[in-house]
Structure formats: structure tokens, C-alpha cells
Amino acid sequence: MSPIDPVQGSVRSVARSSPRLDLDIRTSALTGRPVLHFPYMAISDVHWGSRFSRAKRLCMALRDFQSDELKGLGDMFGGIEMEKKATWHLGPSHRQGMALLIQKAETSAVTILSGNHEVGLHRRLQTPKSIFGIEFRQSSTHVDPLGRRFLEEHGDRYDLEVFKTAANQEKWHRIGDKLHHLGGELDYLLQNGLGFEKASVARTGKRLFKTVINRKMGVLAAMERTIDASGFDGNISGHSHMMGFHRTPGGKLLINDGSCTDHVQFAVHDKHGKWGLIEHHRDRMNVEMESGYKYQVFWKAHGLDHFAEPPVPVETIHTEKADRLLRLAFRMWPARDRQDVSRKIEEKGRAINRLMGILALNGEHRAAAPLHWELHSTQNQLLNLHDLRAGNPIPRRGKCNGAYAR
Image (cartoon, rainbow, N blue to C red; front, side, top):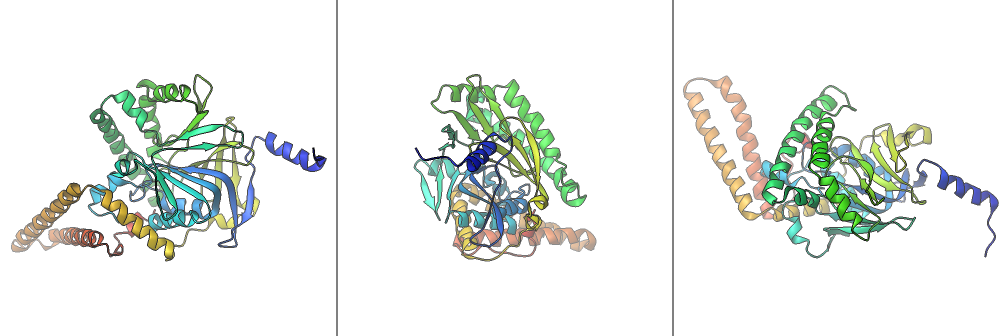
């Protein structure tokens, strides 16, 4: 047995016994800037393509955090939200976030799991697929440095166990989505319009709604029963948007990595196997440990002032690949649904044209002004839809994409 350096041994012992995560600050080989490194990082419920995605803040986290293993635990795309837009266009920060994920896949193991918002993805993932170095699966596993084996999944399957039928589950998901969208609109006004960055009506409402579903309707109990009966030591999932640790009756660990809609949240562990849940802010990160200990890390205190710099979208080979990945996701949207939406948009355009003609005959020019804008927006949607179907690059017309640069 080799002798142990008493100094180094004591340092390792202190690191393991510390209630905080071990901060491993390294220099990025790509940018030459200091970054924060973790062996493992899990994110979910990004909802790229949705107005409520914190895409710009997520770009900052993906830019400044590195990991050996990165897992996207479902609902990375806001497929349900993008259906309503008629065209699957993204804002620059959403697209840049996808590009950063593709770039990370060149040096790290990146896996994305399917969620309930990824339209058409479930049926295409009966076997794992690799695209641009990213592995797409329905579920996966992870073993932490302490040897604990975790099942990784989105977590929506436990809803079905409680709601019994897919129709009933879909009804509750629709109710939750509507409440979340309403809260998201209020958050957008508070955080972007009035400058209250920490405020989140959606998170408060969501916690109330999810508490009813998890505690009163038994979704959490269904997850506990499944994991306790399995050979896993725990579960890592998203779906509920409620970040936190939970112990099952059998003592197994359930980890929910939160979401990237109200605030950017994710789960990590350090090289000693200590788990932490992180909420990313411009000047700091809030950390909750598996033990329940909570603390804050301010970038400036660790010489990481550049973490507060806003992301700058750039055109690279990775953004081109992100465009191709988006077109692939677009094709997963059922053809009949695409045709129905296209038909509705065309009917809407004809109705607006007729109404504008009537107003023009009556001399109501002021009333026609907002209809002109609506017609312009509708025409752009049809042009975008045509370009995406033809396989052309993602178009950028007017402020269509900028509206989603949150």
C-alpha cells in the first residue's frame, strides 16, 4: 500500500466532510476563460421555442459550466407550445443554447431524454439514436462516485399511473399548462418589464398546483412505490418543475432538477459524490445540498465576474447544426397537424383581408392599422412554414425571433 501524504489526505477529508460542493474552477480549452466544472450535470424542462423558457440565462449557464456528463431529462423542446405557433422558429438565445449543447457533445457525454412536450419524439425513440454526438433516449442510468445507481427519466409516466387513462392525464396536463402560461405572462412582465428578476408568479402557482397532484392525488407516492420496488438507489427526473430532494419510505433518494422556465435550475454532484441543486442567477448561484444545507456562491468572490456578462449569439458550425436539428424536430410534428395549422393560418389571412377591405370601404383607416400588422405576421408564418418544409435555413424576418430572446 502506498503511503498517504498527510497534508493531501487531510485536504481530501475536509473536502468530503464539507457541507458544500467542491468548486472545481478550470480554464476552458475553447475560450481560455475560467469555468466551473462538475462531473455530472442534469437539466430538464427547458422548453426551447416557448416564450417562457429562460433561454438567455441558460446560455450563460451552458457557457460557464462544464461537465463530463450532461443529461437533458426531457421537455428540452416546447413542442406543444411550438404547435400553436404554426412554425417551429426559435429566438436567438434558444438557438444558441442548442448550439452550445451540440458543442459540448464534442468533449462530453451528452444525452437527451424525451418528455411529454416533445411531440412525436417518444415513438421515434424505441431504440437510442445519436445525432451530432448527442444521444437521444427514453431513459438512462447514472452511477455517482459513492456507487449509488440512479434511474434517469422525465417523470411523466407516474402521472398516468394515477390518472389511469391518457385522456385524463392529458386533461390535467392541459390545465397545468394553461395555469403555467398565465403565470409565465405575469413573470415576463415582472422580470423583463418591471425589473423584478427574482419574482415568479408561475413558480408559486405551480408549486400549489403540483402539491395537489403530488400529495393529494398520489403521483409522488406512485414514484416512491416504483423506485422502492426497483433495483435502483434513487431517481433523477424533471417534469414537475419543482426542484428538490425527497426520500422514499425505503430510504431511496429522489432528485428533481427543477426547470429552466421560472429560473434556470439544474442538479449536479462533485467528485466526492455530494449532490447539489443549483439555481443560476446573474451574480451568483443558490445551492441546496442533499443534506438540506443551503448557501450562495457569488461569482465575484471567486474571480468569476465574467459569469455575469450577457451571452453574445455567434454564427458557427454548431448553430448550423442546431438549425438542422430543429428541422428534424419539425418533421416529428405529425403531418396532419401541420396541414391543419397551415389551413387555419391561411383562413385567418383571408378573414383579415376581408375585414380590412370592409374597414377601408367605411373609411376606418385607424382600425385597419393593427390588422395590417396581424396580416404581416400571418404572412411571415406561412413563409416560415414553407421554408422549413423545403429544408431551407431557418428564416429570420423582422422581430419574429427576437420576441423569444428572453
